[in-house]
Image 1 (cartoon, rainbow, N blue to C red):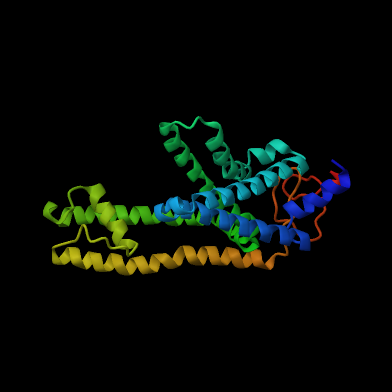
Image 2: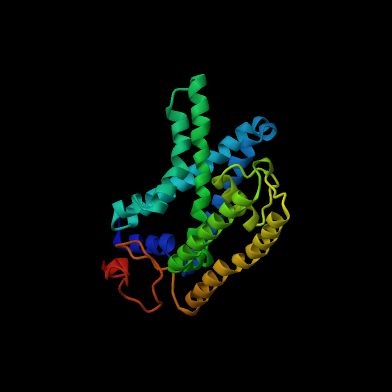
Length: 273
């Protein structure tokens, strides 16, 4: 492939800061959404049987688009294996391969059931969406940056529900549904998250008092991870980063004036790689 053409395609496919790159991302974003809608419509029996031919044509249309996209990404990237076995590389493959499996596998009655199940893997296309939404990339980076704090928070929550569940097991009777400590912990989790299925409920006054405390605690706990993630998002929004993707390690999040990748040290400009 011509070096100039390869560079141009690289800027369009892997970067969203250029006008053509943004147009390409918007087009793929719409294609992903429409293809997922088609999968959902096919699952509705009245629509799937009535418009089977039209939905099948539309499915092949989007499959061909995503196949071309997948092949182009492999052709223009320097480290092809890095992309193929990356998270998005696997998602891109899963987005197209079920449709081809439906053609290659013999059409016996039993096989058709298997094929239908395999074709549901097309829903993996929805995982392609974050790649084309810059704000979601900021959120992902904020989540990664705050993973240790969130991990400690969840560990604390696990300890709280374990203690509360054990207390409720000692207080309440088995007739109320608190038949074991794990069952009581399940109640604590349901109550703490304010889901309230109602399948297990305390009968004693002290048990109801603890339930009230757990419910109020649940509202307070919701604010903790929100604050942690919000602070990280604010920090990343202050940084002037772009969607430039390193051709060597396929990582993004580089500053606007960066010439080298801050993760692996390779040149960001594929023309000089």
